[in-house]
Image 1: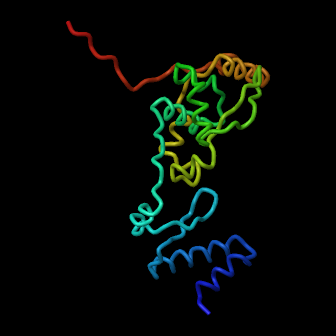
Image 2: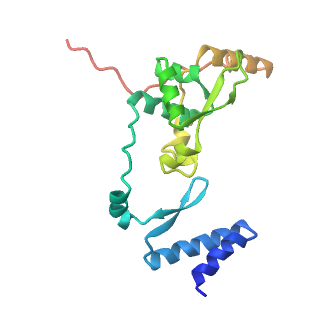
Image 3: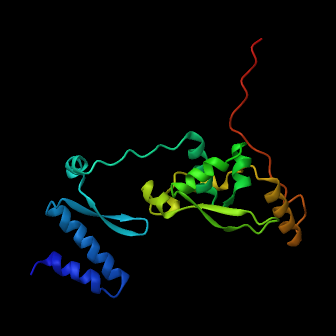
Length: 198
């Protein structure tokens, strides 16, 4: 009886997450040491068996993958706004981008990168959008916290739609706050305007 087969059997009968994690780590190390053609990698929602990068050349010759369609610059901008500010309504994304995102948002949803997350608690109850599990897998992330500069970008001021501003002001009034405290701060820019030639 082989140790790796015992560990594989334990994976299916383990009682706790700690036991499963330990068994997976053991298998991962064993597969590397024994130079298997596959490896175990951790993904956003668990573990996955993947081809060892040393064998990718032959696998691609046998199973050529279709070239994925690239996202356009507007689609990437929209996806970034949704990823950093989710859940977010379409009007808020449009306020940041300054243009309508109907077609771009539809493309992102068709590709499985964005999904409807519910409805906002503002007048009209617009749809909320957020990224999907496929988004995390596609970009090699385990969680949204792994996005670059996630905390800085979530705190940075972005323009809001009139609907969101009205809802924010209404919530502040309900909480008994003064309207000055609920006002949206002005945009602060690190850039300076170029000097005009004289």
